[in-house]
Image (tube, rainbow, N blue to C red; front, side):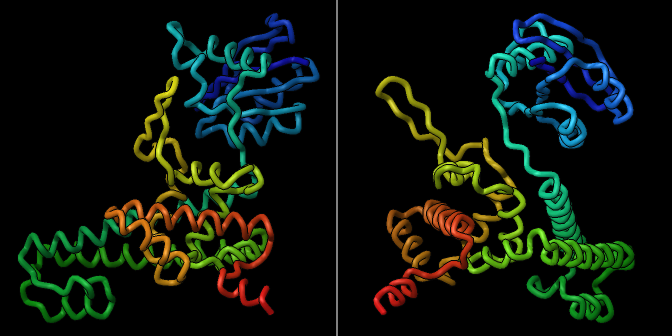
Length: 343
C-alpha cells in the first residue's frame, strides 16, 4: 500500500507519496484543476490511500479522487496538531506529515457527507446568507427612518401595505432617503421570494421529502429545523450515542480534567454552528407545543437560569429527532404511547 498526503490550496496541490516503510517515492506540486489531477493520478503506484486536510476546496477534490484510490480520507484541521505546532512549516513538509499520519493510522479523520447531501447543504447555507442580508436591509430601513426623525410602527414596518402607506402619506419622510428606502424594500422583497424558492425546492426533493416529513412530527420542529438537521447531520448512524449528537450540535459544555480534578467549561466553540443556532431558536418556542418539553423547561427554570432551560429543551429535541431517525417512525408523544400500551 502507498500512502499519499495532499496539502491543498486554491491554485496548487503539494503531494508526497510514501510506502509502508516511510520511504518517499514521489513528491512535488501540481495545479488544482481536474485535468492536472487526472494526469497526475495515472502515474501513481497502486494500491493507494489518499489523505488531505479539510478546507473549502476539499469537497470536489475528494469526489474526483474517490474512484481512483482504495480510500480517500479527510483530516480534521483543528486536530492535526502535527502540522499546526511545527517549527518549520511549508507545503512540502505539510504533505509529508499528512502522508505519515495516514501511514501510521494517526490521522484524525473527520466525517465527509455524501455528495448528494453536500450539494443540498450548499443550497441551505446559501439560503442562510440570503436571510442575513435581508435582516441587514430591514435594519437599514429602520436606521434611515430614525436618522431623519420619522415615526413608524415597528411591528408593521416591513409589511408591504404599511410601507407603501408610510411612503405615500407621511410628510416627514425626506426626499433624500426615499430612493434608498425603495431600493431597500425591493431587495427585501426579492430576498423573501428567493428564500421561499430555495426552501420549497429542498422540501420537494425526493431524497429529503420522507425524512423531513418524519422529523416534522417532533414537537417544535418546523421546516427549517428539519432541513437543517437532515443536511447538517447527514448520516445519523455515525452517532453511536445521544451524547455524541448533543456534543456535535454544540449543546453541552466543554470539559477539562487532570488527575482527579474535573472542570466544566462554557459551551464549546467546536460544534456545528448552523444546527446549534437553529435548535436553540426552535427550543425557545417548543415548550408551547409539547407538555413534556414544557415540563423540562419549567424544571430547569426553577434553578433560575433561562438559558440553561433553553439548552435542556434543545437537548431533549435532539433525543426525539435521533429516535425518529433510528426507528424510521413518526414521533409519538409519551401520553399517547402510554394510552396505546394500556389498551
